[in-house]
Length: 269
Figure 1 (cartoon, rainbow, N blue to C red):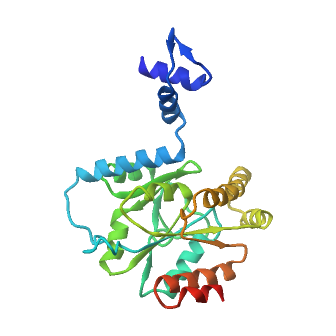
Figure 2 (cartoon, rainbow, N blue to C red):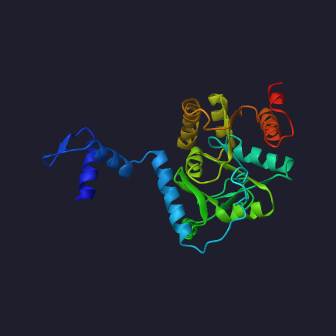
Figure 3 (cartoon, helix red, strand yellow):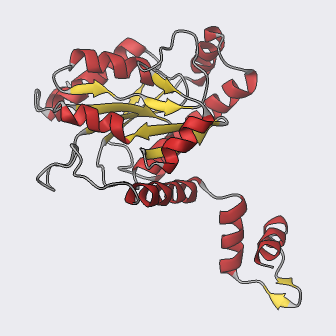
């Protein structure tokens, strides 16, 4: 009865009455959350799933658990649309600041693109392996993008923390929404190509993506910009990636500020 009720409400959201009973606003919200949930609801549900499965595993103190609440485990998250330079900049930053950061590859169910290496760029795994890891509470955050699943592995982050280093991760916005539900407090840097025509040309020249994938990626540029405008502070910094070398220079200077190597005023000079 409940399934039928919510499904009919979802399909006919303008209804005010069903089976001689008035439809409540809460029921319309429940119907939408069930059949077409907004990203924040999906992220919250995923977080609950990770917590539930991790709680039934043997409990231990994680290496990422620092003794002071005032100094949470350091993480750098580079976020932005597909092929905007996140992966390349992540690797460059980890090479430059190898005494502070280590690259943290996510697990994914998608196949590797040309030039990507397993365990270096991502852990490329099957859906069955991904599901098993999920059920074993192995993920800190997960998300779905373009019909494929991605997950930030607990063991990956803990192995980096064990070395006394910070994790550098790159994600799409869905991954950020999931990670923001956790107790981690990363620095989130938005990498966004402001010139959409140049960005589209870049995607086409790579020869890796279908036309729908390219159109979706380009359309998401405006979404990222809107999130940054509508939610001040959601990202700690924003960098234009139209020019990779310039973007890297800005990101490098930003990280030096985070590490106390330069004064904040140097960023404006």
